Image (cartoon, rainbow, N blue to C red; front, side):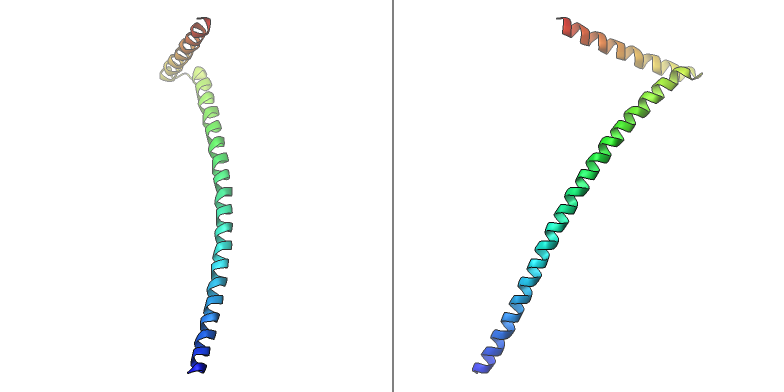
Length: 98
């Protein structure tokens, strides 16, 4: 009976060591994956900012090009946008003066 108990204990010890090794490897992988996620988040943030800047540049280019376009609809939209910008600047100046 003692021999059977020793075999069970040895097998339990082996399984426990395997489980501890597996747990350590999962902890290492978890740390690596968290680091990878953080890097990807930084890359996403950077690309989002770049996309916003490119959209602003595109809108400005489209706005500037609309003045040289023979299409009267685009010209009217550009004039309205420019008028709105001028009104906004005038409001800001009025607020600063008061």
